[in-house]
Length: 594
Ligand code: FES
Ligand code: MG
Image 1: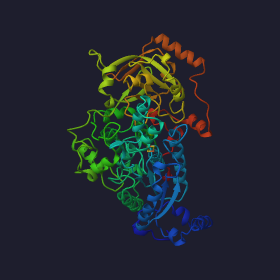
Image 2: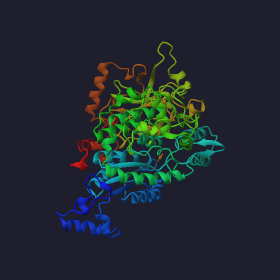
Image 3: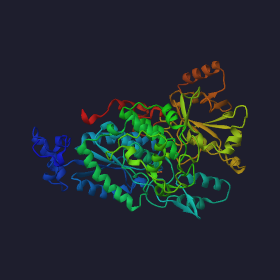
Image 4: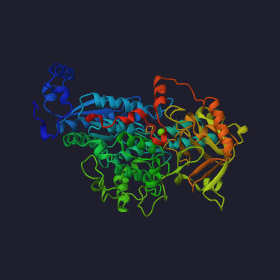
């Protein structure tokens, strides 16, 4: 080395290959002059200071993460103070509510782009600015593939929403507002006003939707500093956490602490258990299974039931409960939840986290500040808050959050005293979200309070990226009679802000020949929660006939590609059961070392 590495770095920084390579002075000069042209000095670039990327997910197109544009200032100050050099760069935007046809389509695109950046530029470590639903898995997945030191920083949730003295939660309020509109209790302008009240500040959704879930899980996995996930975006503590995150990543580079040191099987078990306790989103299995695959950790869809199903619900946040993200923060956030689980021996305490300590050391003794918002383990909101994995001739796996089954729903569907965990119903089948929106209110479908609604053509291939549409509302005429939710099953996803007990993420999807493709409106279906089964009640002969007919017709038909990426991703994407990843990308692991 021609220059001393500051602070006794034990490793050769990878950025030296760009900025200080005596074997190739021409290229070194070229690299230097262009990074100097905005004001960095040769001395800075060659003094052995770690170069730290700030992967910026915020922009005007991504309002949920937009506050990261301001937080990056404090991240930079932390990096600089610890002796590093910050280089901020944009990540392909993913806005959950704004992207057509689905934000799910862009998770793997942002992943792919970030892998190229982390691998191909002179970065020794990276701060991942996470927040809105898919930004978190996209960033973590890329960091796993490249495997350079990485730390996540949540942008933080929005402040609580309020309307006439009641908490209104983002996403969740839409379901309620839609019911009020259907009943004629509010008009269109009242509808918009009620929905907008739920988003009063910068930040991501203040409910326990996919964003709050994935940010909490990033902390439970050990990938962000303890206590970081729940701090609301506008709070001063969020600025301080940004600074601390910047400080810490520089030391992580010096310690050569990489995602592979943190994202172990134990870390995933912890995350699955925390997911149940917080009432986490049904999107979590897709994203964590994807992350595990890119990290090379053996995680299966059944692990979600094995480790997670029996964990009780401790966090009283909408949609499962009453409160919102600000309350969650004041009640103690992730450390308080982890400590409750840890006291029951349900946390792998030795799992390493980004601050260099174990999750056990970080969270032991973390107190609950408000037991209305975070319950103690012996006084949970619900027992068994995790997911059930179902299978049968309709699909090889789908998941269901049984804890959100309401007593009213149970009375309608699960009232047979001899068979209390099973129901049979008549299927009404929709092909994609547009078909559902056009026909749901059509009385000719004969939908009643015992019907089972099916959504197909909504998986990673059928509706590129998988649409969040399985939780279908009942027809307006049933809502007016007081029936707000019907049993729903599908090969799409559902919003984490929905409290619906749908059976979803069905794999394989209809578009790749899964059993949903041969279902017809009018078929009888049987769901048995005790056995974990979901079947069409037709003979094996008829089943085989229908599959043959489907094949002869050229398979299940889905809409044309609209963009190049839709076509490319459809050709290589896997099913939700295994994370809906770009399958060829899984071969590339820990590539920074090669
Ligand atoms: Fe971005 Fe909910 S829409 S966090
Ligand atoms: Mg969503």
